[in-house]
Image (tube, rainbow, N blue to C red):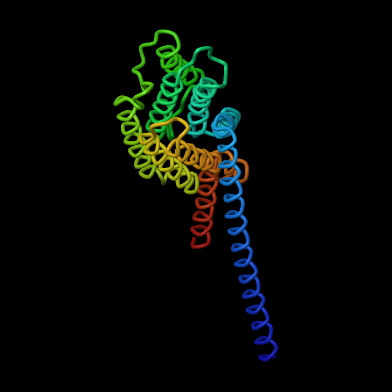
Amino acid sequence: MATTTEAISDTRETADLDTDEVSNQWRVIKLLAYIVVIAVIVIALYLVQLYSYLLFHSIIELVSIVIAFGVFIIGWNTTRFSKDKLYLYLGVAYLYVGAADLIHTLSFQGMGVFPGAVTNLCVELWIAARYLESFALLCAPFVIGKNLKSNYLQAAFFVVTSLLLSSILVFDVFPDSWVDGVGLTPFKIGSEYIISGILIVAAIMFRQKRHSMDEQVMRLLTMAIFFTVAAEMAFTLYVDVYGFANMIGHYLKLVSFYLIYRALIHASLSRPYEVLFRDLKLNEQRVIEYRTNNSTRGHKL
């Protein structure tokens, strides 16, 4: 009998080892697949950039815009089911960030949307969009656990974004960010450093709120912020809007928005109960613990 039990135990241990080995092999295969996909995307975008920098720029920006609008769709349509309004806030924020990025994309020289558009217009719109994004992320930790009114939130972002865009497109009072024959202005370079500083503070604040957020979402958002900072640093270096530093900055922006996609869209769809309805899950755990404790006390009595 003992021999039979030992044999069964050995069989189970062998099966567990085989399962672990297969799992490790799949992890390696998955990692290699990711590396291959990333390499293909980087090479493909580089070849596109050699053919047409306008096309390269449009692809990067449109991907980030689609992700930004996707964040809005998730946040807006799930707000009624969750008490945590962080995803509503981020959704509305990225709706307007995406809108600003769309106008930036359309203003790029060669697009033909803004007749007589010069490089300065495109760069100014970029800076405006990044200020909007950085301040939105800086304020995001403060809304965790707060009850926000969606209409007021929409109105606030609409007013701020309208004022920013009007200062560039209507009143022309936004400081110059590019001078032909000279390059980036001190305002533009200084703004990139200010934006980076704001983003770093936002990342620190997200870390401080980690116990009130899904851990994976917090980690991905923090990574996205630091890739955005890296992109901003690259955008302080270029002397040509078609140059290498500008290209690297757009690669980094693409990575940043991919991480935002993973944090706020993919995670919400693949793990909705843990991410969007985290408060409901915590309440359920408290009820289970309460019932377990009461049951234990009853048995003791």
